[in-house]
Amino acid sequence: MKFKTKFITLIVAFLAAISFALPSQVNAALNGIDVSSNNYGIDVSRVPADFAIVKATEGTGYVNPQFQTNAQQTLSSGKKLGIYHFLNAGDPIPQAEAFVKQVRPYIGKAVLVLDFEDTNYSKVQNANGVANAKRWLDYVYQQTGVRPWIYMSLSAENGLSWPADVIANYGIWIAQYNSYNPVYGYQPRDLFGSIKQWPSMTAFQYSSMGYLSGWGQNLDLSVFYGDRNTWDKYAAANGSTAPVTPVPSQPAESNVVSDADYAQTGVFKPSATVNIRTGAGTGYASVGSYAPGESVIYDHVYIRGTYVWARYLSYSGRYHYVALGVNGGESYGSRSSGYTSLVSHTYYTVKSGDSFWSIASKYGISMYTLAANNGKSIYSLIYPGESLYIR
Image (cartoon, rainbow, N blue to C red; front, side, top):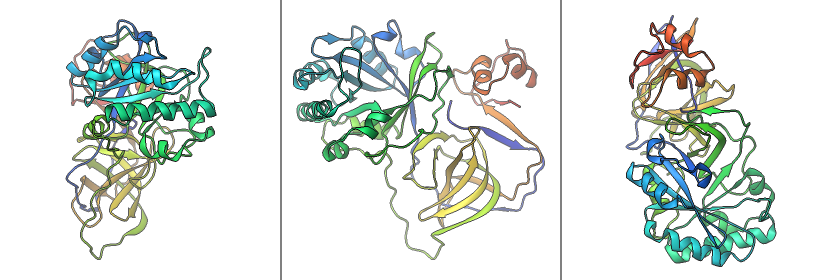
């Protein structure tokens, strides 16, 4: 489930409709999981995910017994593949050699990742560990042509001194858990705090207590800030670094306003998937997306250079932003301003794999109430694209 809520107004007054430009491509975030032998028996092909990152090796002598099976399940089910090594204290080069040996058949097909975290038996989050991480990353790149990501906690990114070339050449996957409460479905959220050294996160692991259909135990949930093409660029064995958010080409010069904002309420319905961001600009983190057919009520409009942005208050109590379109051109969707809402309700658009239980859990209501609100029983069938009244 994406980080958003849907609204519809009952009493409205239509004032105006304004069009903006729609770029040729709109980038969307991908949702996924990571798995290791801790998830023994999982069939990745049965779990809803855009990607799966599979543990291959640890230290110099450990190979995940499920690595090959899970990697093949990931690819055969059309998911994007990532493969990681868990760094131990000690010489990183033999560890990198062991990793490269295992991943050789997947080079060019998978994102490669270094897991940089402490354990009871191995402490790497120190100055020596940073140096070893750099050596591992550089060696794997030299041997494969793939620039790996590095996975670490926010405190490790903030508190350790990372070399400039590591920051410039290797994407960062940040882990931070707000709580250990169950999370049902994908619910990307904001990072609490901020990264201090990397310019942006490549991916964000926001829960270790995720629950998805196809697996009865908890899973790590992550969001990747890019689309499938961006993922492929990270996996490509050509040595190039892939941007997290490609900068769109600038439109032709015009006399439109390039920096302004004004209070305006309205309803926006995207015609293509658009990112949800933490600020009015493409440089801000993407924390989810809206899909065609969904809608959002906004309370403020910002013009920031190329794009026009709408602000809305998410169910988390934080403001988020979506781009309405390119300043002075076509639209990302339909936008009707001047709506006055006297009563606001929440609706949900059913996705493949949803159930009354999973949807009710997301919104903190009883599945019996959810079914009754829609004139159904919990045994009724629901279909992708169907709109359900929540409250």
